[in-house]
Length: 396
Image 1 (spheres, rainbow, N blue to C red):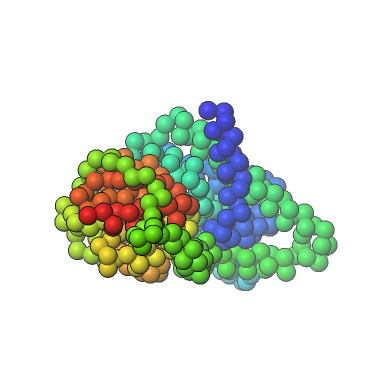
Image 2: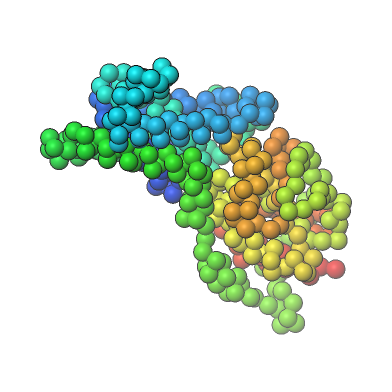
């Protein structure tokens, strides 16, 4: 367990390097730059508590109620937009203080008073917005928490992850304050507040519009030229011209039926029985998972290349994070990413459990007789996976 906690801590610290952290950095700088050091502490505590609550502690309750954090994320983005406007345009702060509702009036006061409360509120918003940045280690914890509820081990791993993530956030916050101090008195007045406001305004609008997730997908996705080159290079053939087997196939028993699918995208409802006679890749994924984003170009390329030969990809979208439980978000992500293969929405993890899947992404290769012949998790091994597809297609 201590070793796993150390890995979780390191994973949290390295998350800041991911593309999904880009909108978070200006929010941290803007939220902490106009207050005292106690606001930084408030931001870090608020971030950690909200992240743990929504991803682990009450994840099962949210899943059971069918409630997503999407409205909360949009509300948090709205708060950052309002805070940005207040910093950029001081008259807006005066108007909100005099005429706005009490919460807005308090939000408009970004001075030294109420630094801890302001920091906690901003930190909670950052915790909501940063949830898509979790890596593979936290993904397993979140999946278990969403289905079975929180466990002591899961909370310990998540806490270590949050502690690691808080380190770079603290360094960014204190570094920004130190830099502003060194720039001199002229930068510590209205202009500095306005600069912080612009950062928060742009970041808040980016999240509110969903542009952050689209940018993450664009930055993280493997260029199509790389996929084409990799697939072109994998042309190993036997002397007869048939695909040369490079992966030993197994017989792992009949593929379970698809269960609990509440909606289908790009297809009428499918069953494994209806797909008998075709080679099927049951692909477990979720649109916010960075590893799923990396593998998606390869999955789409396999589908396009072999679909006329009797190959079908059935994407099972099993949500990892709360906002991925919103079917509208899933439909938008499928359209934005140009996914054309059938996608089944598995919000209650029914098909996930039927297959005994454990991670995102998960690849289950099924032959024409409906038997599982190969399983692979995670990124990489693309040539081997394509070889499995060719071998199964070549079988009579």
